[in-house]
Image (cartoon, rainbow, N blue to C red; front, side, top):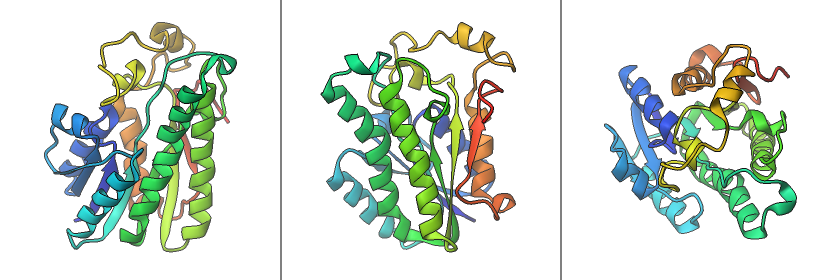
Length: 242
């Protein structure tokens, strides 16, 4: 039985991933905001964490360490959006929040858990198609996600051969993320994108659903990807082909 820690486990993609990994016999440790964990209870061990709070990260890490086990996998799904607006119109507080939540928080929480990982373990980070396929209005988020790709590749080199580190980079996914994010919004706002327009511009004729993303994540966690590290899997229905 493998043990996999998932940061952002109570989000739209995270909940599906938890269920799939449990169904395949894995032991899951779910980490997410207290509000998210209470709103979306999960059938596994759950630990509250706020990736913007160093004390919270340290406490969560100590809790995992106290379980006296090694992590075979780590998935970091943490992230949220602050809406769509041109870069020159973003105030510094919103810019800093976007970078902190989508880059710094992912880095600090991933770094904290790395020492608890077993030999030959796998880390999967979550970037975005926007990291390289730029669209107007998403500048700060795109910058953060480009940083995630750079972080992934750096860790892949620095942690080899003990740990593999790869990323998935989805396009828009039909989850509460499109209305602000699980745990950081009321999840009842209007979508930040025109879903129909995006679907019609995608060769496969729709935007992604959670299982489109969880499949590649499970592949990167598993032995089938054992000779892959520092790679990015683009998941966008053909909308962006690097």
